[in-house]
Image (cartoon, rainbow, N blue to C red):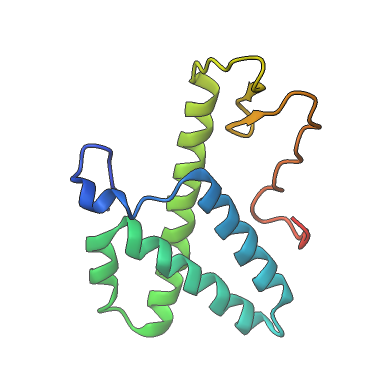
Length: 138
């Protein structure tokens, strides 16, 4: 598979999603799938989001997958999209833990668990539930 790396031209850099967008996409997809009227409708929600991931992160694989029968293409896109999202999450989590971030104490403190600066005196935010949970609220 072809993945976008930081060494590729800037024109593709605008396709790369930040951790906030990944988390929001995952949350929205989970909520939409759980609220779907049927299992096939939930599957379409997952496939549609997986297709967006593939289109943005695996150009050549996405193009080749167009030759598959529709049902098989949906399955491949769901699996590959999830693999990409999992790989990004694992990489980013490691990068946050290893990051050395200095923050002026007047502005807050670095929270490697969320990848954000916690404001002074602010209550810690609840992290999103892991993918695959049945909690539609998060």
